[in-house]
Amino acid sequence: MRRTKKIIKITLLAILAGLVIVPLVSIQANKYIYENRVTTYLIEEKGFEKEDIESVEGK
Image (cartoon, rainbow, N blue to C red):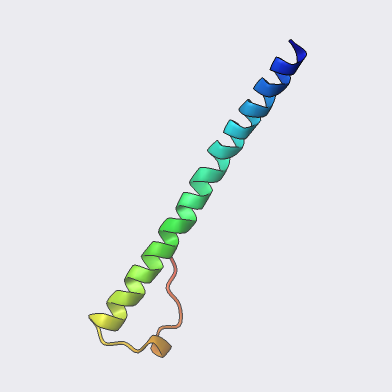
């Protein structure tokens, strides 16, 4: 019985950690995708040089 409780606690802890980490990783990935999309648009469509673009920030 004692081993079963330990396994349940570890499983719940892992699920809780996943619920916290997944949204944070998702937000960072979306910011990175947005940054690349905007940079590509500025270079290809608007004719900017990569050196002219100081920064692109996703909010």
